Amino acid sequence: MDPNPSQRSTKRGTQRGPWLLAGLMAGVAALVAACKSSPASTVAPGKRPGGDSPSTLGPATQISPPSEARTPRDYRKDAATHLYTLNAERIYQGMLPSMLYAIGVLEVDIDRKGRVTRVHWLRAPRHAPEVVAEIEHTVRAAAPFPLPARMGKVTYTDTWLWDRSGRFQLDTLTEGQL
Image (cartoon, rainbow, N blue to C red; front, side, top):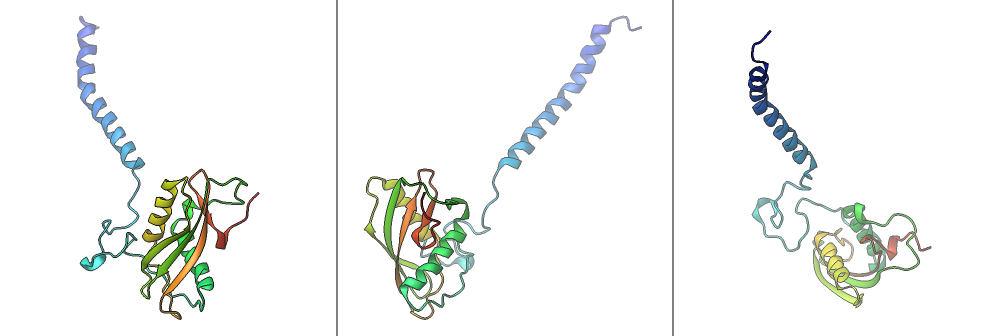
């Protein structure tokens, strides 16, 4: 029997303390690291591979196949599919509610290299300026668009159907409304 058991437990507690604290800190660090999202691209934002300066806000590594569309109306299907592919997590799934937060009609000019050269609102949702800015950012960030191979350049128009949740559908690919 130990003549002084309180000293023994204190000695054991001080020996375990640093290891317990280190283990706890390692666990917290692992949890924080696991919660971080991984980068979508290895290219720094605003940079192009090879040092070229970007003409848009879009991801540098993205390459779109050329569009075989012969008319702007046909091209808008390719553009809508392109936008849906890049924004899959933001697309409203299913039929939209009968009351939408915002509806906007946007005209987009695309040059022969798939770059956005102009966006022009035919009908802007003026009550929702944050939606106007988000749509413009989304369109510019999606460049380069499919190359309008048969037309050289194209101006296409699509209607943006915006839900309160921040998700959207384009009229070209909409699933309808309730």
